[in-house]
Amino acid sequence: MAFIQASFFSRVLLKEVGLYAIVPEQGKGPFPVFYLLHGLSDDHTIWHRRTRIEWFVRTLPLIVVMPDGFRGFYTDNDDGPAYGRYLVEDVIGFAERTFPAAGKRSGRCIGGLSMGGYGSMRLALAHPELFVSAHSHSGALFNMGRPFQGERKAFLEKVFGKRRKGSAHDVFALAARHKRAGTRLPKLRIDCGLDDHLITHNREFHAYLEKLGVAHEYSEHPGVHNWDYWEEHIQPALRFHARALGIHTGEAVKRLGG
Picture 1: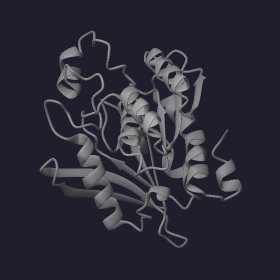
Picture 2 (picture 1 turned 90 degrees about the horizontal axis):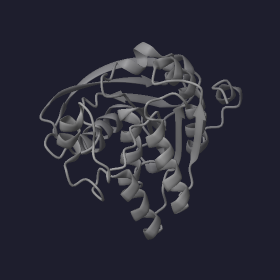
Picture 3 (picture 1 turned 120 degrees about the horizontal axis):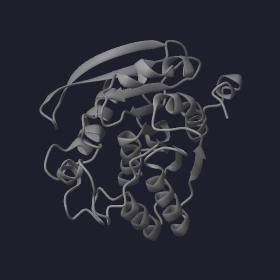
Picture 4 (picture 1 turned 120 degrees about the vertical axis):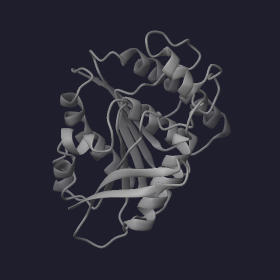
């Protein structure tokens, strides 16, 4: 696999931005693309620094793109930049112009942790026409009908606004809207550690999807909100995406874990 560090100009953010990418050096493209999102306190380098993601995908015909999401929750901020549009227009646009990418729904998947877990669910539900599958580890899957509490309240209200229930930020509302419309949704997978401080949010979103009858995978495992957990659980997430993308590589996929 080739490891690529790229800088490019975001027309949405009006600034230079960075991303990491892992690209197959063998095989015939175009290849499907996995957009892998970081959490609130990190940047585009973190998945490569903290996990063996490059090793895990070494035998897969898959491009992995790790963009910088800043602190924007991958949504168009109520009082700030349009980070959702940036991901869809600039990041995907750059990846599909630059790499041997499939460039269609059946060849795109997305996932992430914490803020990135929320981001992957929101982007998949806001743009079901773009992604075939999405996963969330330890996602910040907030119920937007409830008030924010604590020291981050002011920051979160700048991101999501004060009238956020039913908005484009609201993953509960997006799921309900698509269920009523009969939209073909991406395959969804959600997991969280049993001792993670976000477990209640994950359980509530899972229960709501079950109530709606929205198909998804959900699991809880021993662990907290840390890289030991995400290093372990990115492997079954890769298997999940491989199935959705139609990647059949026998032992290469089996080695990714259960």
